[in-house]
Image (cartoon, rainbow, N blue to C red; front, side):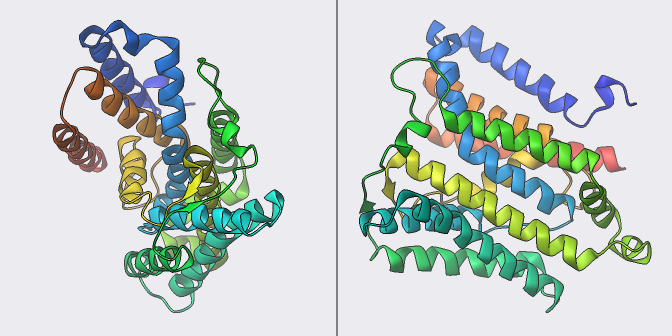
Length: 310
């Protein structure tokens, strides 16, 4: 067993603790309060769940630029169905199923037609965003959340809402599947060398298709929780979310070349970005500076990944 400091998530954990300690010293005392900690956990949920699906995709050596549009489309689908009188269960199921089907189509285009994931997901990013705008008549859809807003809002206290625990549970399941199942080993094998994996009998196309569908379904879950947060279906929501998910995976030790990364690392990467944004807000750093800092962290993480692979 590798020592603790050799685990892929150890570096992100140290970085998270250092950044938190920095802002704990610079920011007002409210930064370290339990209420703020609960708020940061809630703000990380959507990015964390989409990062979970992105982890599997990047481990395969692929990339998905459409998750932000998928989350927005899910919120619109849920809001439209609830506004039209559909039951809550139907709205939630169709909300998750829609991006899952989109992910399946992406997988078919990459495995059967042999299109590159970058091109396919770049196109689906526009297609899904356009579908969301068309379904919403290019405006927000107000709908009665019928209680699911409580999933992301535990009131004025510091209690963690159900959405945070759902994200945590999905992360645990995702980590266990990746590390302790045949499917997880197949994902890592394909990301390391797809041709060798195929020669060893790994069903490359089937595993790739399953990962794309899984990532789409996770984007659907994130979209449901986004609707629970906003209580509206917004077709312009989650612009740039795909970049945050990719950044979380890379910061967490993932490699865009495939075969390297971990679910705990991605979750720590997502939380690290939330801590940076919240800390900068508490100390009065302008938003444009926050964007520069976040982008710089991504570049540094990629540089460290390059050095590690050398």
